[in-house]
Length: 79
Image (tube, rainbow, N blue to C red; front, side):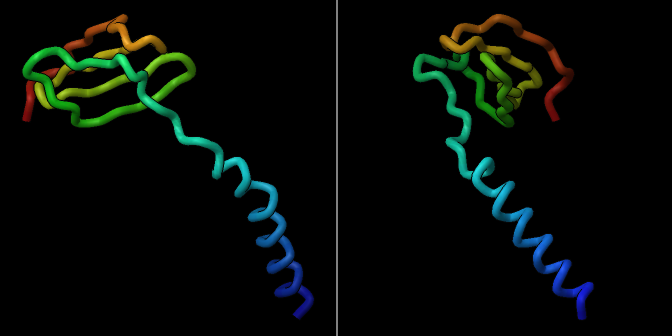
């Protein structure tokens, strides 16, 4: 019984200390971000000061915080 009480206290403590960090604002894409003509996004990921969009044609486009393309990487053939 003491072990169960300790477990419940630990779970509540983890929720209280970790949940506020998860409730922060999610990352956002820059307002001026535009994909090249004919491209459609398949996946998006974020880093500090950059965003990456994988397109359906197999390109990885790296954008800076202003929405300008800084790298264009060919990831392979489209499925």
